[in-house]
Length: 537
Image 1 (tube, one colour):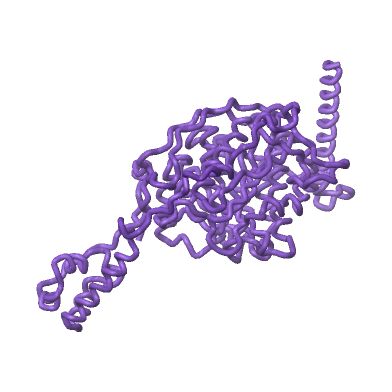
Image 2: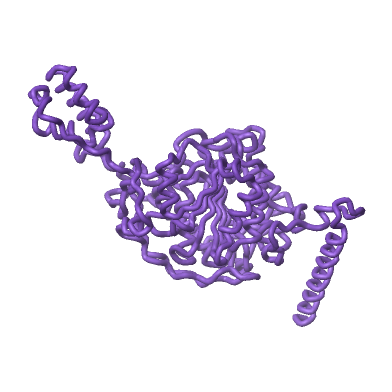
């Protein structure tokens, strides 16, 4: 069972929360670069001899109640020591012995010798499961004397590069091709100075972390595959008639260095790079990699905008709030870790698409009583997709809060996304996925996005990569729509959604008026740009 702490007790459970970062201003229409925030006072992760500075036991876990054995079975306990009797009555033995009634029945049916062997076996199992100082190594020491200890994340000194003005770099030999592939064919940026000089709106960055999932393929090739096969990231969106690359300044920010022999060591560097993108005012779009990335990515957003100032929409078939396992960083623990460390309020975590075997009823009760909002596939089945979609968008848009979207592709049904670590049947289809991501990015104040758990080696047809590219494209389209002021609920282009040659649906005139209004707006925008060019001349 899980005990259900209140929001207040949950907050008190944090031992050493990170120092709050300087809160930065939001992204307004147009590019507004935030001033770089100083690096927050962050703890080291669990490496070497550094202890983890927060609660490592799951606050939701409730110990099984102990029992008090009656005197009627005392003769059966004759061979047990006082310590062994205490163990038999304790919660540690509860999962083996059952309740008081079953325990007494078992004792009455067996000999003292058998009972001694039984208790010793239970003690050995409990002891073997737990950490014992002197017997167990708490971690594997790193070779700190190695001259290449930090080589994996060492940045090349700028003095080694050819001299150039800060800005974006086009890698195409021809007009749009012929060079090394980039996300969506967008130009490259290498430094925060490039992002600032070019007034970049969106920086797509790869994080090929491959150790947080623990089984199946782990996504180390996801960023390479997305660059080679994800050309759908660029170009026009037919539904809304917006080309994100024409509206927004989008760049490929390369891959973040990963120590793929150590998830723990990778976390802090990922957080640093995502933070440096956010500090320039650009929206980071992270391509993973497994879902442990949510921890450094969302923490980086809290560094930029302030702790508990960013909401999260979490698309997943799993709720990823597990805790208490030996690994404090994994693809099943980022949510609880972010909440435990105070980066995001539990009320501001909104989950969509849950349908795996967990959480159980007690965990749902914990989520409900602490204010975490969740929208399971059971809700979709009961309420319908349209009603659920409207509810999610409304919750995400509350108070104009800054929103980070975490999109685990296993929220999509494996019929469309087989190349993921933990597929679960019964998920979203691609039309639903594209619609909700585009709407959220258009109608809410999105400041960051991640797509995770893409494992290309599991899909020789490339379809999962192509579909993942379309999800990111939906995000870019939504961000461009917001920039263009197309933020009305469920906006679709009047040209793309209705030929309006006849009045079949009875609203031909509405579509024609809407089309004319857009044309006038476009003409006014073109005239405004012409005036600006004249003034510059």
